[in-house]
Length: 313
Image (tube, rainbow, N blue to C red; front, side, top):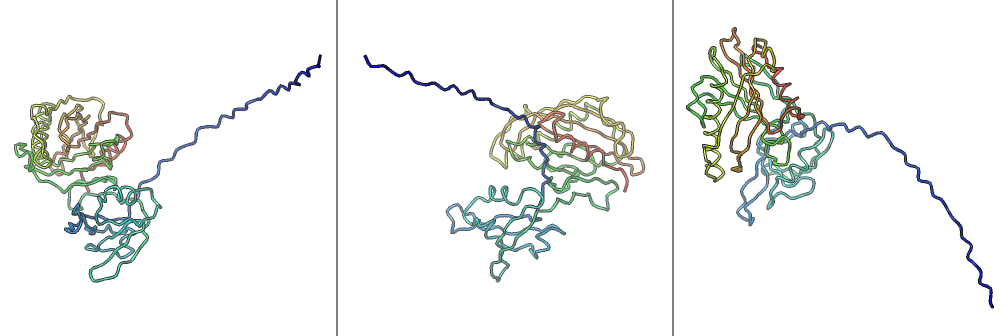
């Protein structure tokens, strides 16, 4: 009988060493701008009728201004991507927006001139400051979007019987439905005289405001709003600032249910603070509006603008 050799077994024990590293600190990048506002031109030769971009205005002190870009210049390409025949939204989001220090290659042509490629570096946004002629002052982050100033009566809600002006500023992610800043913004009212502001008055004003805005958005975006779904609820608050603009403040918090630009009904968290500025004989009212409740990060920006508001120059 043949002897069968038994296999020689080697046992190896493996030791796994796990090294736990401290979490990497994430530093938020400061958003930057190249200083250009652009619009797309109509092109009948493209199937989608989309043409090149034209420069509407150039921010003073920006890299675009220093490179000699002027209003009326035409942009043919961004980072090598041709604009004509495309929806530029994604191109602009990926290139014009970004962190301070990043660069963008832009192919620009002036009327009757040859195309030239320039490299623009993003710089910090200059803050939005209200006009020097105002009897009040504020500073809003430069990457927020400002609407033109509206005098009362407001075009979309003429039944609100205040006299004065309204300023509007929109968070950078206002139009992005995936952003936590979606439909977040602030409103400043500068009203003539001493206005007795109450929670009931706020509710009436905001219902009129957003029902009128719903009708306007419906006309512009082709939907029919059910105005009975627009509502507002406010109550006096003891947790707001004690002063606003340098004068004693009255605070309110609550919510507003309204239509967004897509015809969807949404509910915003709303905080309001108001004060009478005796030297100017005006009432200042500040609205903070966001889908996100406190303590979402956006509220620190809203609070900073509110707390920086001053009744005088």
